[in-house]
Amino acid sequence: MNGSSNATSNSTGIARTQGTPAAGRDVIVVGSGPTGLLLAGDLAAAGVPVTLVEKRPHKISNLSRAFVLHARTLEQLDARGLADGLEVAGRPLQRLRLFGRLTVDLATLPSRFNHLLVIPQYEVEEALERRAVEAGVVFRHETQVTGLVQDADGVTVRVRTSAGEEELRAAYVVGTDGMRSAVREAIGLPFPGQSVIRSVVLADVRLAEQPEDLLTVNTVGDAFAFIAPFGDGWYRIIGWHRGRDVPDSEPLDLEEIKEIARLALGRDYGMHDARWMSRFHSDERQAPAYRVGRVFLAGDAAHVHTPAGGQGMNTGLQDAANLGWKLAQVLHGHAEDTLLDTYEAERHPVGKEVLRSSGGIVRLAMAKRPWTLALRAALTTAFDHVAPVRRKAVGQITGIGYRYPAPRGAHRLVGARVPDVALAGGGRLYEALRGGRFVLITPDSGVEPYEAGPARKDRLTVAHWAGTRRTTLLVRPDGYVAWASDDAGRADIEAALAAHVG
Image (cartoon, rainbow, N blue to C red; front, side, top):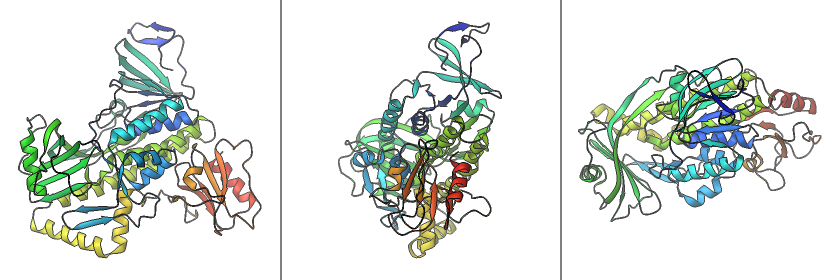
């Protein structure tokens, strides 16, 4: 697949494998951030040959931008056997204070993970990379995509390495290569949007005084500041000052960061020994499509948001969880290619909603005029006192509130996220989902037992409710309801399995 053996040179000087390269069932994932690592690991675990192409050398950076995992992402990681280890490495946070008076309480969240998990992005990447390596993903570091061409049978990807240029071939390509995606550029998709905040400052520092809260965040007047721990004595500081609108290239020193912290937080906690400082601008952008033929976009290649709400990495990981099982189903011949259209249909609206919600949070934080301050006060009051408003906002931020469109006439549960329900015999759903399988949950008594036949045993687990529930559910590998019935017979179940599991 990677064009590195039996290579010859053509007239353009590009190395190629002997003969016409075949796409087969291979997938190329471009970009080894969290989204690409999760997707590549899912595909390899499902028996799909996958190569992960990354232009950087093999080194996971400790200069993380993302610092939190939300409940829905932790559920997805639980379905891959990774959540418990990350829970040990990170620190849970059940209450978060915003704008000085708004408290977000996650203790009643209907999830096994009723908290934020404060953990640096590099810890997540390390866990995902270990899984991908164990599953058999082929890594190609220091390999830069320079273009691609697709045809009816597959995609040819042009790459540049230290040894020269090559062509790689695959059935499908997924760009998870960030905001400046070479894959998105190669398929000609624009990335419309705007810079919302300029001259955001970041630094990794040590503190003489430990903050009272696990996450410290506040806005006062023209200044905003955020402090999060790495867990090893270092802290990430993010700050912004409305009056300091300068280019990203403008020099930055620790005194500027301290001053922003003092304005927003009341003190600078004795910041010292900065090991890294940088400026960046925060954009809101979304590609108009997530699929062009045999090429897909996920994560920051498809959408970028402000850091507000900590939803960027989480949204990308959930993109990967949605796409991976669908690609495996199609490549193994268990579903038609049209299944892949549902990736964009389901995830593009979620990306749009995340742009809206994260943008709303940052605009409220930036509020200065009397009417915007009044709006922030009114929304804070509604959040505190109106339960439906609070549930919707928390559901969006944590990811558990999203559901996918259902066909007309489908059962009311189709498209809904399924929580980690208890199963007969002491098991639970997200353990049963491990291995990338569908899970059929049937009543424990009063119906004819159903067993997965040998043709579906590798992709279907049959379980029973731990209680007396009578609904029969077919749960997709990503934890959403594919089909449901309140009075299913064997023929109904067989029809549902044929339609969804293959």
